[in-house]
Length: 139
Image (cartoon, rainbow, N blue to C red):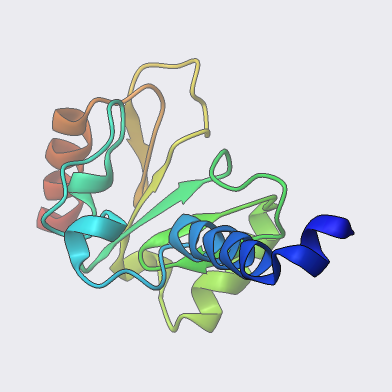
């Protein structure tokens, strides 16, 4: 309490830093794409972020797992059930038959494979891209 009375600017600076980090963690508030992991930023190691395109949705339940199920850009994340994922896709105006879904946790102990329009299993970026093209070619 003494620090706050004597150094109110310290409290204000701390709040600005905490708020800025929170916004950056959610992908907002960045001045350019590269600072927020946008299209020009390289994907993180082990990530398939570079494979996401206009007709592709990534489901990553390990991203922000302590938060309720939600969507940001082309990723559905958080504590999601299949019903919630389906509900979000509907809210986003997406028809499962017209998009490519990459579910990063579905059957993750299996070899990378496709079921209908969903890519699942242990997949490399190359696997995801190849299977996405295969799905698109069958439309």
